[in-house]
Amino acid sequence: MAAAAVPVSTDDLAQLVLNTIDRDGAIASSADLRFQGQPVENQALHGALSSLERREMITYETIEFDKWVLTAEGADIEANGSHEAKVFNAVPADGLAIGDLAKKVGAESAKIGQGKAFKNKWIGKGKNGQLVRLVASIRDVTQEDLATIKKTHAHPDAKVLAELKKRKLCDKEKVTHYRVAKGPHFSTVIVKQATDLTVDMLLSGSWQNLDFKKYNFDALGQEPSGGHLHPLMKVREEFRQIFFEMGFEEMPTNRYVESSFWNFDALFQPQQHPARDMHDTFFLKNPATSNRFPKACMEQVKQVHSTGGFGSIGYGYDWKEEEAEKLLLRTHTTAVSSNMLYKLAHQEGGFTPAKYFSIDRVFRNETVDATHLAEFHQVEGVIADVGLTLGDLIGFINVFCQKMGVTNIRFKPAYNPYTEPSMEIFSYHQGLGKWVEIGNSGMFRPEMLGPLGLPDNVRVIAWGLSLERPTMIKYGIDNIRELLGHKCDLEMIQKNPICRLDKKMGREN
Ligand code: FB9
Image 1 (cartoon, rainbow, N blue to C red):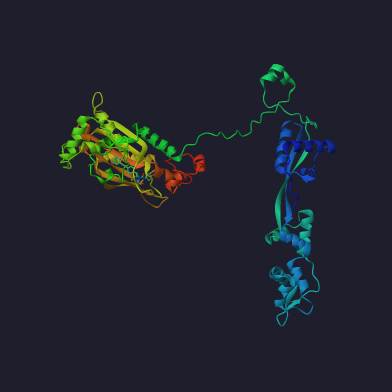
Image 2: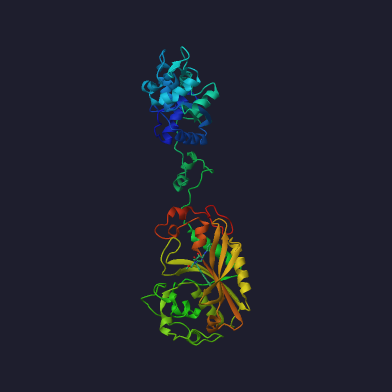
C-alpha cells in the first residue's frame, strides 16, 4: 500500500511542479513527484495543475489505468506460500491423519488449502482415510501469480486476475496520474495574480503591468445562503394557487383571537356544545371578553338559538350574551367565514355572489399525538350564491380535489352544528392502499345565514381540510413532530423539495 500523501498547499504543489519541469524538462508521471520525500495527494495536485494550466504556464494530461494490488491475505500468501501449498508440504510421504492437518498448518489454511490441494490433485485420501501425496513436488502457482502482481501491479492472464480477485487475494485500483509539460507562459516564478481591479490600481495605473487571474466562468458560484420555505408554506402556496385558479378571494385570517360569537354562536353552535368548553378550546384570561359584535345580528342569533326562526325551531335554551363575549383562540377559520358572510350581507349595495377561501392556523386543546398538535392550519373554501345546491358543493369539491391530485373521492354523511347536510370527504390513496379522510363539508344552515342578514334565497356551501395532512403525505413524513416544533430538523427545511400537489413527489407515501 503506497505511503500516505502529506497535505500540501496548492501553491507549494504548483511550485514543486514548475521546479520539477524546470529540472527535468517535463513530468512523465506525477506519481513520481515527491514533496519533502512524500508522494503528493492527487486531488490537491489536480487543483495546482488546473490553476497553472489556466495561466498557460503548463499543459497536462490525465492518465488513468487500473493497478492490481494484493489484499492483506494475498500479501501473506505471496510472502509465505498458498494455503494449498502449505497443506501439501504438511503431508509427509507416509501420509497424515486428516485430524492433524489443522495443527500443522493452522485452521484457516487447512480449511481453504485442503480443498484446493485436492482439486489440484496434489493430495488424496489413503486407504485408511489419511491424507497422502499424489505428486512428488508442486509449483505454488498462486504464490507465483501473486508475486507477479505485487511486482508489476498486473498479470498477463486476465483469468488469473479474476480468479485471485474472487479468492479476495488481490483487487483492482484505479490510478490517476498526470503527464505535465511546459506551457506557452512557462516560468518557475509564480507571479501572484491580481483577482480584483481596485480603485488604487486604476488611480496608480499599476493595473497595466499586473497579471489578472482569468475569470473561471465555469466555477460554481457560492450556494446562496438564503431563506428556505417550510414544506407547509410550499403546500399552502399550492392550495392558494388552486383557489385563485377557481376564482376565489382570500379571507383576512391574521387575527387568531376571536370572540365566541363569531367562532360558535354565529355558526348556530349551541352554548353547551362540548367543543365550547375548556377541554377543547383555548379561552383567553386577559382580555377574557369582548362585545364588539353587531347588536342587531346578536339579537337574531340569540333568538334563533333560543326560540328559532328562519324555518327552524332553534335549540330552545336560554342563550347568554356573556358566553358569546368570551374571547378564545379560534378553533376553525370558519369563524372568519361567518364574519365575512356578515360583511357580504351588509356591504354597500347588498349581497353579491362570492367565493372565499382561508388557509391559516386554528387552535384546539386536543391530546397531542403523531398526527395531531394543539394547532393546525385549516384550509377552507366558501361559496355564497343564489340557489346553490348540494350538487354544486360536490362538484366544487371534485374540481378542487382533482387540482390537488386527489382522485376517486367519495362522500360520507356527517354532522356539523353549522351545516346541514354535511359530508366527510374520502379518497382512496393508492400509495397508502386505503381510504383517507380528506376533510369535511356542508351547506351552512339557515339558522346561521339568516341572522347574518343574507337573503333567503342565498345558499352557502363550504368545505374544509388541513394543510398538515397533505404536507405529511406529500413529503413522506409520518410524525407531525418532524414537521413542526422543536424536534423539527432544520436540514429537512433546507433540503425539502419543491411541492407539486398534482404530481407524485419523491418521498410521497
Ligand atoms: O386534512 C385532512 N385530511 C387530508 C387532506 C388532504 C390530503 O391530501 C393528500 C395528498 C393527498 C390527505 C389527508 N383531514 C382534515 C382529515 C383527517 O386528517 C382528520 O383526521 C383531521 N382533520 C382535521 C381536524 O381534526 C380535528 C383534518 C382537519 C380538518 C377537518 C375538518 C375541517 C377542516 C380541517 C372542516 C371543515 C368544514 C366543514 C364544513 C364547512 C366548513 C368547513
